[in-house]
Length: 470
Image (cartoon, rainbow, N blue to C red):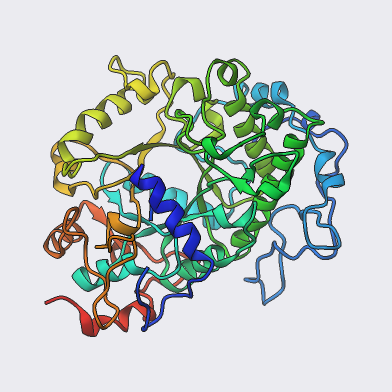
C-alpha cells in the first residue's frame, strides 16, 4: 500500500516540478499477425500533422521507421482511422503458434538496429551480471542525487511511466526526461503504464483513474469488445501511447515496455477481477490488442516486451513477450537477499519448465525467457545474487522514500543546500558504495557506449559534486 501512496504523491507533484537543477528542493509511491487482423484500415494511413516518428541520423533528414499514426485536426488520434483496424485474436495466436519460440531473439520482427544493439547487450549480461535500475516518477531527480553523492555513479537504467499521457493528463515531461537521459547519459530506458481510464464511461466529468476501487462504471469485458464506449477509449489510448513510443523511436531510444503490470492482482482495473475476467481472457485480449497494434499496425521498431502478469491466469503466448517481470515488495527490513533467493529459484524453474513452481507462475510452459525483478522496495544484495545464483536481468527499485529520507508528509527531506539523504531504514551511503562497486551490478559507468547517446554522468548531476559525501 505504501508503494501506491508513493505513486499518487509523485503523480500529483510531477505536473508542477521542473527538470533537475542545482536549486531543487523538497518533494513516491503484442509480431506475426496475418493480414486478416486488419479489417479495413490501411496501415499506411497518414496525417499531415503527424510528426511523431522519424530518424534524423541521415543528414538531418527525417526518416520514418514505423507507420505514421493518423491524427485529427486537433492533433489527437483520428478515431475513424483507428477503429477501422481490429485485432483478430485467432489469427494472431495462430501466427504465434506458427513461429518457433526462440528466447535468443526479440519477439518483434521490426526491431531497429539500435533496438538490436540493446537486445544483444541484455542477452550478453543475462546470468552474469544484474543491471541496476531506478524508477523515476517526478522530474526532480532526487534519487539520482542520493546515488551520485555516495558513489559518483548512477543506475544503468531508469524507469519511466506513461501515467501522465492519458486520462486527465497531457504531459510530456517524462518523455522529455527519457530522451534527455538516453541522449546525454547513454543510459537504458524502461516504461510502465499506470493506465488512466474514465471512472465512469458515461460521465467523463468524474475524471480518470487506474485503481479498481476508484472505477465506478468501466467494464473490463467491454474494453475488449468492439462497438462499446470502453473499447473506443482503449483503442484511443493504445494509439496515443504509440505516438509517445514513436517519438522515442525517432530519437533511436529502445524501450523495455511493461504494460498491464501486476495483473495477477485486482488493484488495477486491468488486473484479474474474478472468474469473469479469467474466463473472458480480458488480460490476454488487452495484451494482444496492445501488442498487435504496436507491432503489426503501427510497426514500431523500438520495443522490447516485458510481461508482468505474474499468474497463470494471465499467461500469454511466449512469442508475444521477451522478458518476464516479477514485482516483489517486503514490509520488513529484509534487503531481499535471502527472501528473494527462494522466490527467484522457484520462478526461474517455472519459466524454464523444471519441477519446482513459483505460485505466481504455476502452470506456465517452459519459455527460456529472461526474468527481471521489475519492481522492488529494496536494492538486492549483489553478492547475495551471486552466492545464490539469483541473477535477475535487472532490478528496478521504486522511488521516493524507497530511496530518499522523507518528511511526515511524504516530501523528500533535503538540507539547506537542497541535498537529499538516503532513507536510513532502507540503505546507507556505505551500502551504496559497496553495491555499486560490486562487479555483479551494471551501473551507468559500467555500460558500454551505445549508438544512441554518449555515456556520461549528466552535467546537472555532476554539478552537485561539491556536496558529495566524504
